[in-house]
Amino acid sequence: IPPLAAGEATGAMVLTEPDYGSDLQSVKTKATPPEDGNDSGIWHLNGTKRFITNGNGTTLLVLARSEEGTKDGRGLSMFVCSKDKTITIDRIENKLGIHGSPTCEMTFNNTPAYLVGKRKFGLIKYIMSLMNGARIAVAAQGLGIAEAAYNLAKEYAETRIQFDKPIIKIPAVYKLLSDMRLNIEAGRLLLYETGKVVDKLKASSKNPNADRKETKYLERLAGILTPFSKYFNAEMANKTAYDGLQVMAGNGYMKDYDMERYYRDARITNIYEGTS
Image (cartoon, rainbow, N blue to C red; front, top):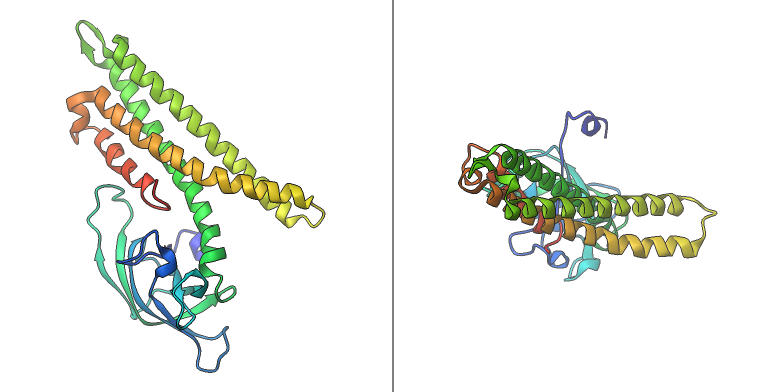
């Protein structure tokens, strides 16, 4: 944990495979238990994973099939392992956007690993919890991209002169910018409310004297708001970047400005961590 917190190490959530993306319950990567039958001992992982953000990281959380003969989510467990010579990076994907992070296809070749938590709870409990946190992060990512796209479009519209006036004074352009701002603020409020509910749920879950009905209510509410916030902000980011590029017209299409990057980066937000 200290190296991760200090920025000296990177980690990755290693879930998806070449044949299984959203259908995580069907992943094939195999986890072989310790020979002595002690679950806390060293397991070994074998299989291929794809579309792994920061897959070349030093600490990896891996979803793998621990229960022989199973085909559903209850046969999956979570494991932690460190990068070593048994892990090969088969390729780094050539992506449309988010070029700041490597997205990898990787193979585990009898990689030593340790069980995280209990067997069979990898997908149905641990990964779902991680995914909820990741979806809030993607909602924030979408909001940030939208904010950047709006600011650039507004600045451009205020300084670009056409027909002897800044184009922001053209009604169609002004309406585009107004709608962008409106949707950004709606997304911001939704994200903040989601974060507030999740924080309340965490506090209530840790409080032995908390009202159980209240905790259950917060659990249901967080379960609704988390994917909804991710969905809204991801779609909003794509629309805002699209409209921002439209405001800038030909210049927005050029790499001379950052708008084309915002447009490309926004596209992943409604794909990863749960497609819209």
